[in-house]
Length: 142
Image 1 (cartoon, rainbow, N blue to C red):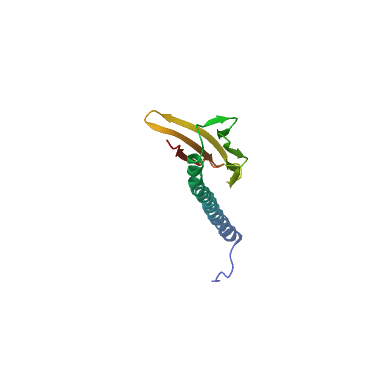
Image 2 (tube, one colour):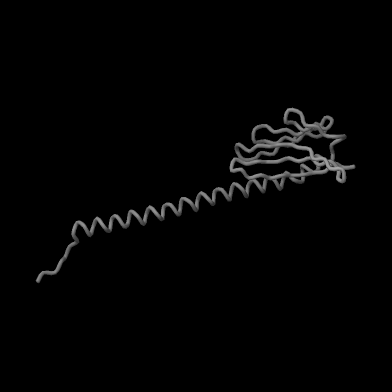
């Protein structure tokens, strides 16, 4: 009786097919993991930028004279204004401009919230391309 010292073609093709299936599954897991990691990093950077902006926004709103109005997407109070230029938020107070750069395609929306029991609140909402929203609220001084 002879002993077999080689593999048949069917056995080799079966092993190759199993290796391809395994590698496809592993590649999918790594791709999904890296995609989730990139999304988490973008969100962390957006939150970090928003944290830096939060104090400046409150200082800006507190230092503005008079009431606020929004015209053509620009928030105004006297000579002071806040506007967005693409992914940059510009705060102009006393002739000095501060610029805050956010991720590409980020958008900004200004709003004024009024409540009888509370002072007028001025809100900037930042929306990233991944649809993450951050709202920063500041009340004007009475």
